[in-house]
Image (cartoon, rainbow, N blue to C red; front, side, top):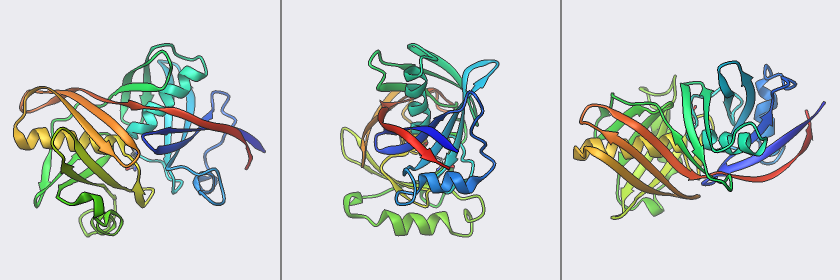
Length: 261
Ligand SMILES: N[C@H](CCC[C@H](N)C(=O)O)C(=O)O
């Protein structure tokens, strides 16, 4: 069987997208997803998404990590699927869609390549030593450091992700360096089991953790630089709860094609 696919990227976090409104793609075989995401034997991608119809929403986002297993929420994937929905003519400038962590509101630029995606509200941040641990739709570990440019994110991230605390469920490991007018973030992603060029729920977790650490309340905007570009996180913080959390950034179609599965 041959399927039509679309390849998108958001700040270098790249995804395979399938219009599955006709339910032609049966996702029971995770090996197929894993192979499609392989950069040598498939199309290549950090994740794989099915856009499906839903009776109460514009569409439903079903996300899989590159290892073929269903993932938790993917922020950059969410922004890319909104751009895809606009490309397909399902939405115009705003949308309400359903993802694994619940409903999401998003707005998209007229050109269709810049998406502001609302993330879930957060009221729980815990600590693991000096690091912050929180769930922004996906679980994240946030460690502050200096010298991130030359840091070994792969080996250190992998070690934390596989330590006794996190081994079974896994966690996404973010390293952050404050560079003055912006934060610089690098992430080791669970499910990809490698460093990616950007992680949307990750930079969101980082921005919230830094505000929590500083007790920075009110409306906060945090520009973040990642390996694949720039993202902006906006939210309101009243000292106990983060609301109106928006992950803002680029989402672009790279190519499309057909592949036999
Ligand atoms: N790249 C994603 C995170 C994918 C989530 C996945 N790695 C997991 O923990 O299941 C993002 O932009 O938020």
